[in-house]
Length: 291
Figure 1 (tube, one colour):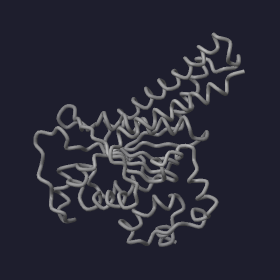
Figure 2 (tube, one colour; figure 1 turned 180 degrees about the horizontal axis):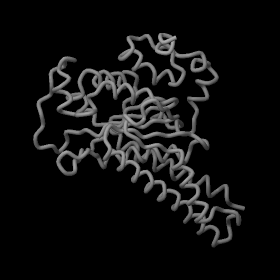
Figure 3 (cartoon, one colour; figure 1 turned 180 degrees about the vertical axis):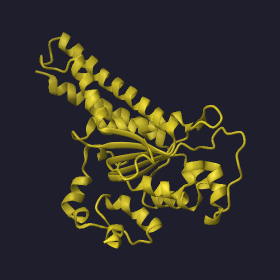
Figure 4 (cartoon, one colour; figure 1 turned 90 degrees about the vertical axis):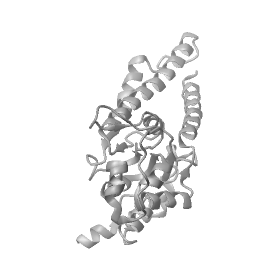
């Protein structure tokens, strides 16, 4: 039974399963019958938040943000990356079917708080923008009386947030979500004392860990990459991971590039596509409220 549990997986889309199976399980991890059924795979590929080609089952978004540390010994954060992660999360929450579970996970507690706060701020801003449009149209007498009120918008916000989980990788072990967005945080951009890249050798794990900390832990990496059911989106600074992430992160980046799942200018792309999506959703929502 133990071998069966380790060799057959019933959670991940095959595109998500492919890399962990090859890199961590010696290609022994296979898809269960339920995952392999063609009808389910077709449904998984047509989810609302995957309409844009850049938001498929597996993506790596290269984000050029700077890591920040508070007082000595405090946890790390990355404001730019937190904004990209929050944009992805909010886009899913407002477009997915009710009950769709979304998780944002990161190795760092400070980044967890940043992502939580940014998600709430973005979601409130987005819903309040819709509310203002509705109120304007109501004042002109061109929307139905049952158009959402401020209280309704606030309720929608809380409902969306109830489907969101922001956690550290360790706290999310053993859990799953329909969509998982990973924030890697670490970036050598702007650092004064940049360590030399460690040799490309598994035996140099201490040198790798001293450069990128928790992110170098392959056990945590394995946990993070295997939590998603339908979409796994990783946000990080690719040059830092390539130079300091060790063989596992280099292998993952190579995999996403070979599979055409790598988005070079992730921050700009996400901002542009999310803005277009937001405009379309608001237009559709307002159109539905007209007499």
